Structure formats: structure tokens, C-alpha cells
Amino acid sequence: MSSEMIEIGIRAAREFGFPCLVLAVVLWLLREGAHAMHRTVVVPVVESHSSFLKQTAAAIDGLGRTQEQQAETLRELAAGQREIHAIVARPKA
Image (cartoon, rainbow, N blue to C red; front, side, top):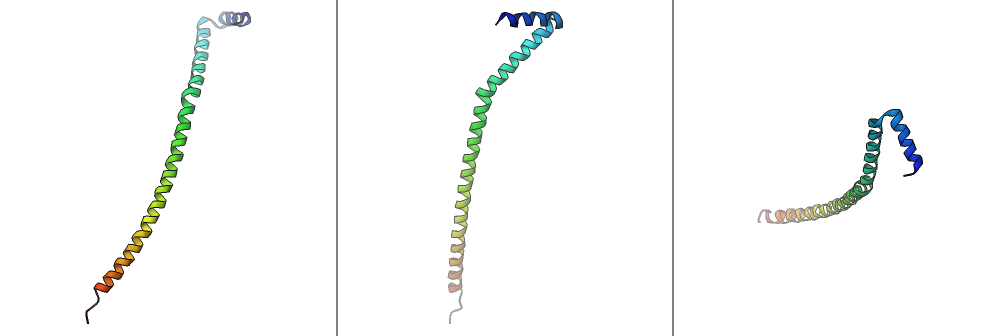
């Protein structure tokens, strides 16, 4: 800490009072702590969450394609079953 900063602190303490100076220092320390926490905690969590959402979206797209294929297969099976039913249900001559 430079002597100029100490001088400014002493002048601020005389003008505003010691409790106000302590409050200002505490607020500044809290600000610095919040800034450090943002860089080390919040940013990595947001990045990993974004990555998770992208992976989830890709998985959901894959599930949608699979369901479309299953629906097409079921349509084909149903058509075949109808043909079999029509053949079996014909009146015998």
C-alpha cells in the first residue's frame, strides 16, 4: 500500500468517521470476493450447464429420429397384419 493511499484513508476516516471507513473496506472486500467467486465458480458452472443442455438436445433429437423410424415400422407391420387378416377372414368357397 502506498503512502498516498494511506493518506487518503486517514483523510476519509477524519471526514466520514471510522465506522464509515470500516464499512467501505468491508464492502470492497465483499466485492473482491464476489468477483473471485464469479470467475472460479459461476463461470465454470454455467459453461458445464450449457454443455449439458447441448448434449441433452442432441440426445432428444436422436430419440425423435428413432421414434420416427419405429412409427414407420409399426405402420408397415399394421399394413401386413391387415393383409393377413383379410386373407384369413375371407369366406371359404
